[in-house]
Image 1 (cartoon, rainbow, N blue to C red):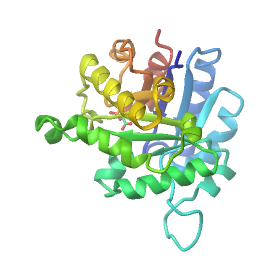
Image 2 (cartoon, rainbow, N blue to C red):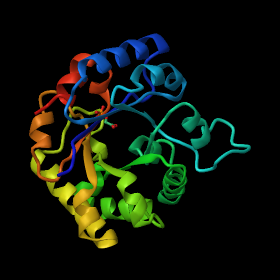
Image 3 (cartoon, rainbow, N blue to C red):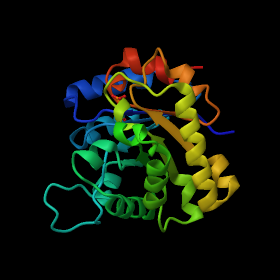
Image 4 (cartoon, helix red, strand yellow):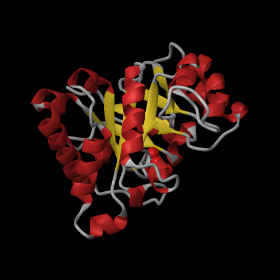
Length: 249
Ligand code: PGA
């Protein structure tokens, strides 16, 4: 049985005071919660949030990391610096990184391998654009992003990999994939993992859904056989909306 894993991606929101208040409310609200949880605050908030979530069962995640360990990389943040702050998980390949900051599969793959080498859990995001879905290419796009993102990752490290399927057209738009379409894509991605690593890793890997997850649609999405949790953006910024999602079921 796979655990449900609910993650909040705070993106470029919140000040330290607001982040501390939100983290405190989540720790309180998720005490004894039955699923796995994560929050991914912006880099400048990590040091504030780390002591609040420590020991609570809510993991601390970062939204990105550099592809290099250290060096002359102005504006980048390395896995060594993240580890130093108590970060355990890194979100990589988010569609905003792919499409706004033009990160390609090769770069994302280097980040994935470096983060795994340093003991992090990785949430690898994949997802198609609206025009790719309309052209009937959603599956091949997600397959290609999954295969290329995981190139060179060995089976022993796969238990520290989570996939987040986030159709780009559903992110921050209020549009959600239907539970049927989302579940079908999750099943497809699971088969891709099966082709790469075999059936046991494919059965075990957690595949989150992301894209306008809200309290009103969370349980319906999570009822899908292959949907093992959520990567939540907008609705993760308030305890009133994140807690009902995180406590679903
Ligand atoms: P959203 O973002 O929930 O605001 O659509 C999801 C994400 O980008 O991870």
